[in-house]
Structure formats: structure tokens, C-alpha cells
Image (cartoon, rainbow, N blue to C red):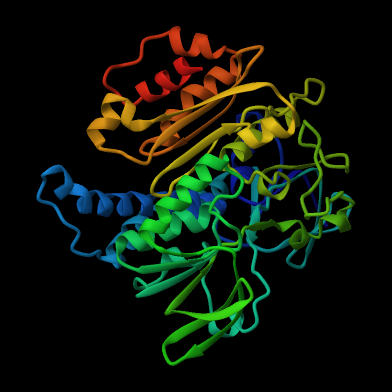
Amino acid sequence: MRHFDLLIIGTGSGNSIIGPEHDDWDIAIAEDGVFGGTCLNRGCIPSKMLVVAADTAELARRGPRLGVHTRFEGADWPAIRDRIFGRIDPIAAGGEEYRRSLPHVTVYRDTARFVGPRRVVIGDEIVTADHIVVAVGARPHIPDVDGLAEVGYHTSDTIMRIDELPRRLIVIGAGYIAAELGHVFGSLGSEVVFVVRGETFLRNEDDDIRLRFTECYRHRFEVLCSTQPVAARREGDDIVLEVSVDGDHRGVRGDAVLVATGRIPNSDRVDATAGGLAVDHAGYVVVDEYQRTTVEGVWALGDVCNPVQLKHTANAEARVVAHNLTHPDELIAVDHRVVPHAVFGHPQVASVGLTERQALERGIAYRSHVQPYAAAAYGWALEDTEGFVKVIADARTRHLLGAHIIGPQASTLIQQLVQGMVFGQTVDEMARGQYYIHPALTEVVEQALLEL
């Protein structure tokens, strides 16, 4: 039985913990998948590289509206895919090679699971450690649909590496993964139909955002809302997904199915409870503000313990754990007070803070304003008729409670509002305390704040 100073299970954000301050530590890393975790290999990075290609296709379609003779003539899917993974795969391999080259790091390429407090079996070997970091992420949730496994389906883990574009893609789900990948395949040439359990896409977004986004996607795709998948079967080369709409059944045909119905934490795959770790009702490992679990010396970070499931939160948690491992008497807490997120669909969505619905539920006296992109010079130049910035402020303190943007560059435009919230600026200070470049798109943010 081998003992380490530190064992890290998972090589996503967990891999970033190791720094020069750990040079005299004996460290082990266990990974049973591709080195680098979800974000690098099958999540944020490849999906956004696909979004860039999809956005380019949409831009080509839009050219004639602006008097430019461009058009979309199809996509070379294998070339798009190979450009992406031809860049990503060497990074994953290089990351593993680098870790193996370090004399104080042992890399295990096998499944790790707890068999007791700070006691883990990796393959056939029992390993113990003074500190263990659980950073094993999450995996796609698969709904219980009769026949789905038999007909075959894709998740975000697999669909980005397929060999050819589906002729007709059925997407089950309406969250950010469904929205982004539906945009990718629809823009590049697939006919896409969405099977949506709820009334809209992006159910957790502000009501004005989710309603506008759903309207936009209805214009682009076939969208079946308030629809439940019931069963799946094959008829020749087609997959037929039987769905229930208001009690009536109908068949939806396609040659591929993407299941994008959320992700669940991998705490069960490491037998977290066998190690004494508390797990909540949804399977997330319970941690405190210092990322400590309920077992002394065991820490957790990322999607296995945080339902937000965002890479930037996982990275922040990794920085906290890295510090706390080497400064046990000067622990720092993670700060998740202001956490923005974005959906890289078409249109783009970005949000931070409270929705108007949440402000109402909390009984907060607030003011809100919706400013259309078209009111700003650059938005007018874009001929954008869909985008807007919505801001919500405390009526008493004038501090920003939330901001929600839909339209081009939303994920970039939100950042100034995030910074203003973090530093406690009032909406008046954000609006008037600096110059906004004219006629940049940022003027729509300025206008929205001024209206408050």
C-alpha cells in the first residue's frame, strides 16, 4: 500500500492545483478518462470552436441582407472536426506527458474509488494520502425513455467527434448544451428538431430572456415545447422518437439523437460515501466555503460539488484548494457571490445576479429596464431586432441586482457589469463614471444603466 502527501482524482481543474509550492510533495493523480477533463476534451473548448464555425456560417447567410454577396454553400464537417481535435488532442497528451515527467508526481490511468476515509483503490492498488482532492466532474444525465439505448444516441461527450453531419438531428433538451449544439449542427447544415419538456428554452434565465430566446429558436428550428419523449424505435435508417404533446402521441423522425437533459455529479463513480463524504440529495459532494468535505484532509471542487457546473467556478475553487493545502493556518474561502454565465447559442445569452422573478420572490423593491440593441448606434448598424440588455437594480441602494443580455457579444458585454457588481458600484457610478466608446456596442449597456 502506497502513501502520498496528496492524491488528486480527476485531471480537469484538479490538475491545475499542482504548483511550485508543491515541489517537495509526493503527489499522485488518478484519471480513468482523457487527460484534461471535460472542458478541454468534450466540453467548453471544442464546443466553442464549433460555435465559431457555426457563427461563420450564419454570417455568410446574412451577407445579402447587408448588400454583401456571400452565401452558405455547405460545411466540410470532417475538416471542421479535425481542425478542432487536431489542436486539442495534442494538448491533452502533452499535459499527461508533462505530469509524468515530474519526479514527484505519479500518474495513475485507472478508476479511483474510496474504500474508506482517505483510502482509495486505484485499479488493483490501495492508495492512502494525507490530502485527497476529489475533482471528478459530472456526466450527461440520460432520461428513462423506452428503447432509447437500443436505437443509439449521442451526448455532448460523443457528438462532437462524429464522422458526418446528421441529415436530421433530434435534440432532447432545452438547456445550454442543447441550445449550443443545436445551433452548431443546424447552422452547418443539419435539420434540427428540439423536444423540449418545458414551455421555453433556458428555463432558469430571466423570463424576458428565455421567452425571446425561444422565439428566436422557433424561427430557426422545429421546436416542440411541453413535449415528453416516450419511446424510441428504428424504422430502416431512421430513428423514430415517440413523444407526448398534451396527451397526444406523435412520432419525430431523425437519423441521430442528441440527449442534452443536464449533467449529474460523478460522486457515485468514486464511491464518495464509502470514503465517509457527505453527499446531498442530488449527489453533490458537500463542501464548506474552504472546499473541505466532511472528512478531514479530503477536499472537493468543480462539478462534483457545485451544481452551477461552470469551468470558471471550478478554476476559482481549484485556486482556493491550492492555497489552502499549503496554508492550513491561513485558509481562504471561495467567493461565489457574483457568478456570471453565458450560453453560446445564436443569439448569445449572458447573465449575472438575480432574475426579475427572483427579485419578486424575495420581496426586494427594485427597478428594471430593457434596452434594445437597436437603440445603440452599433446595434442599429447590425440591424439587430432581437437583442437587448436587461438590468435590475435595488430601488433603495441603487446597486445592480442582476443583468441579462441576449444578442451579439453578450458574453463580452456582461463583464463590465460583473465587475461593477463585484466592486459595489451603483448603477449611476457604472453609467457615468467612465467614457463608453462611441459607437461601440457597449453603448447599449450604458443606455440601459442610464435608464435606471
